[in-house]
Amino acid sequence: MPANLPPQYYELERAFKEELDPREKLRMAEELLRMMPKHKGTDKLQADMKSKISKLKKEIEGGGKSHGAKQVKALDHIEKEGAGQIIFIGPPNCGKSSLVDALTAAKPLIADYPYATREPLPGMCEYDTVQLQLIDTPPISTELFESYMNGLIRNADLVVLIADLESEKMIEDLQYIVEQLKERRIILKKDRSESPEDVRLSYRPTIICAHKEYEDEDGSKRKKITEIFPDFKMVATSILDEDSLELLQKTMFEALDIIRIYTKPIGHDPDYNDPIILPIGGTVEDAAIGLHKDFAKKLKFAKIWGEGKFDGQKVQSDYVLADKDILEFHM
Ligand SMILES: Nc1nc2c(ncn2[C@@H]2O[C@H](COP(=O)(O)OP(=O)(O)OP(=O)(O)O)[C@@H](O)[C@H]2O)c(=O)[nH]1
Ligand SMILES: [Mg+2]
Image 1 (spheres, rainbow, N blue to C red):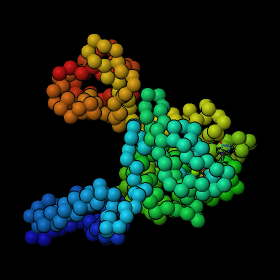
Image 2 (cartoon, rainbow, N blue to C red; image 1 turned 60 degrees about the vertical axis):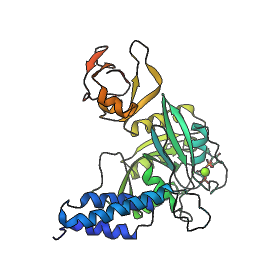
Image 3 (cartoon, helix red, strand yellow; image 1 turned 30 degrees about the vertical axis):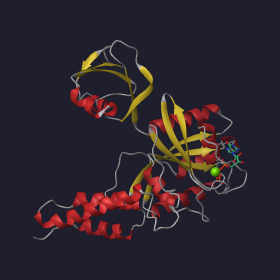
Image 4 (cartoon, rainbow, N blue to C red; image 1 turned 90 degrees about the horizontal axis):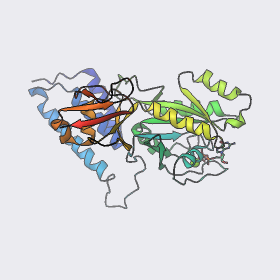
């Protein structure tokens, strides 16, 4: 029986064969399997692809092929922690490390010379009961673009592209980064409302951080950014301006499109320290699964507290939640 595969399948298969990054290869393999019509004629193809997927998973878990040689530290992937992973990228000396230093307990090297940061470094930033994982990275320029940055950026939930308001080359530097990423099939987007039709592409939601704001007294540099990159949300920051750092955190949180759900044991006060994090549109059932897989099965109903609700209103598992809702589960 013929397999009858769609033309996009062959296009993606070609890209899959050329791709070297195992995580990207895995993503493509899963998509290829998804695209395969499921019938007798594709049985063998399906089995082959499943075996490729499991090999790739093993390779990724094992930190890459060792070939009997010394294991190389994998820099292209940082395990996610907290409510969202946010990668800070930008030209040399723009202030990536200074921002990660100011917002987290990580201690990156800050220097008044370019190319100070040599490797990615994560740190946790607490914003309004939520933990955000920020990643400091080496600079991107005509002289340097570490290949592992592709994987890191593709995996992140949000990109913060940092503009150096002190630099004469600010716009060129930003354009160079956006173009270089495009060549690597990573497209920076204003939000996550669209997903690519061409599955070889990755869309990454992005905000622009116009950093060193006091170096742009008349605001002309910031104006230029909004002219050249009108789509992206822009936040102006300085290490010396606490309010601007607070605004950056708020903007990052909002751009993650997540909601916080607090839980309360029956007859007790809510626990505000460790919210369940759900994507916007998450339901009572999703929140129950977030606590424990079996929990959702046993759930009879929940009581809810939150804006625009009667206190303790009874809701069913398909009820759509809002940010900062409080839930009391009943089994
Ligand atoms: N004026 C001003 N200078 C800043 C600010 N933030 C950082 N800097 C300075 O900018 C320089 C570079 O800072 P880093 O944080 O090391 O920059 P980076 O982007 O990590 O640099 P690389 O790792 O080399 O790419 C240092 O001299 C910082 O003191 C700011 O808000 N205002
Ligand atoms: Mg740095």
